[in-house]
Image (cartoon, rainbow, N blue to C red; front, side, top):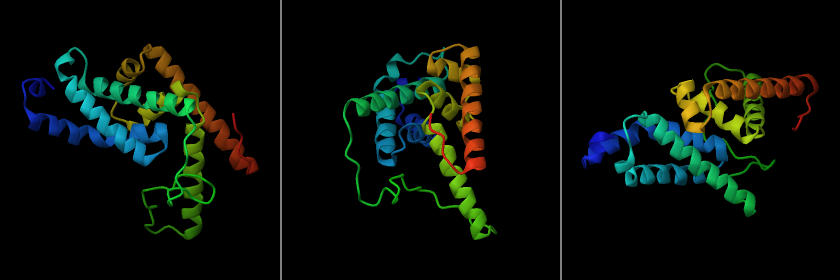
Length: 191
C-alpha cells in the first residue's frame, strides 16, 4: 500500500488481484446477493484507493481492507432493513425463493444421491449462517476465509480477541445445534 501512496498503479492492481476474491466471498456471504456483492466489492477498492493516503502501516493491509468491506456490507444490510427490496425474477432465484448457486457442484465420482445430500447440507449450512446474529455471522464468515488471524478479525470487527473467540464459538454451537436438529427431524429450526 505504501507504493500505492507513491502513485504506483501496478501495486494497486496487485492488491486488487490478491484480495478481490476473499473480499467478494465475505460480502457475498453477508448479503447473499452476487450482483450486490460484486458492486460492493468494487466500492471497497474504490474507497481503498481514495483513502490510500490515510492508510498507516501500523495496521496490516488485510485488516484495513476487510474493515472497509465489513463496513460497506453492514451499511447495505442496514439500508435493506429500512427499505424493502423488490426481488428480481430473472432466474436468479430457485422455485423456493432461494438464490441460485453460482458454482457448479463437485461431480467427481459422486452418485447423484450423495450430490443431492451434499447440496442440501450446504444449503442448510448457508441458511444457518445467514440466520446468525450480525456480529456472529461476520466473525464466522471472516473465520471461513482462513487467511485472517483472530487478532486481525478482532481489529476488523472492533472487539477484543476474547470476544472474537466467543463469537466464533457461539456461532459454531448455534450452527451445530440447527444442523443436528434438521438432520434428526427433517425440520428447520429458526431462531
